[in-house]
Length: 469
Image 1: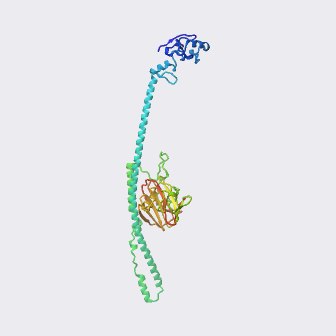
Image 2: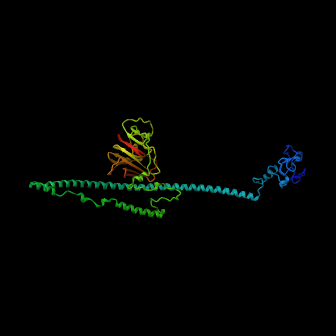
Image 3: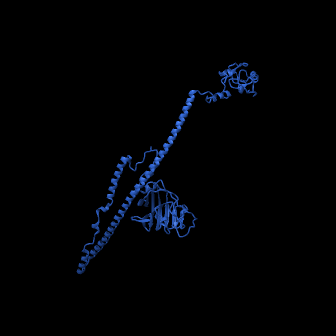
């Protein structure tokens, strides 16, 4: 676009120019002028308004009062708001925020910036895909590791069963020998008493008859049949386990890296800290104070209690009577068996709790929530199915049940306080007979628990069970 400069009043040709016809609207009177003029600030005027305001404004723009001489720029450099300026920009030019045109170097930088943005977006997408792949790998590793742990628990569960079978066989044999020895002891005491009496006999015939009785050999086979290896019937098992441990450690060092001892925990610098539940507990040598570190407070769920079960106000004690408690209907209530569950679902961290039993018959159990609530089939009985594990107390005797089969336990102790320890992740459930001073392991179950477990109780007539705090 070409412009013609002119001189009006005090304004020189460098400061004033005439505009083409499409830009002749006067800023003051808004009338299209024949010869509109504009200053370098970009404001157009007709000559009449320009000369009228010139007397008041002097050498400054009558509209914005800017000094034309102070700008140091020719009038042809029109401001960005002017149509001529917009036309020049639309033809391919760019300006920055201050209205100054961007040169070719600036445009090249803009192209580089766009390229960097595209590269950043591509890198971000690749990062997201990599995160997805890593998460998939982690899930696969966890799933595979879980399968390996489950299989190892199955194998060692079989070993535990074989050890239990041998234990029962050895105990049964030894109990028979013990009974025979006790019989011999009674016979020896009887003969000893007879000998003492014989010392005072004065009748020769009587003396000779009794003499033959007390001097005849004892019918003893128990002492000679005692085997020296019965004191340690599991030495071969221990040797096999020791060999297996060495092989596992060598395998781990070769294929899995160094295998640290189980009691070692990661250092404090580990980004994924491990809870205290990673510390192993030996069920046979554990102390009560060790178990109490994992104490969990439980409460009874009144919505599961059978109609003959009465719950205390704090929901810590349940008693079986003969009076219907008129509990409101609830789909989770046991309808036929005098059973009740606790509210809390147990999983994740280790947990331990104790119950005190007052009565002749009771059952202490852990079960999945899906145990049947109606009927008298094994599906609704603690230990009568494969979703519940049960310790039974019956007139001074213990037994355990799972999967519909029951097994008596032979123990020298019988206590009314029972401790229950659950290591959910490791897959162990242990029952203990508890006294203030110690605990005695009654039985430990091993299983790959797959969902939360709930403590449950069955009560015989006039029995009470209290959750110990």
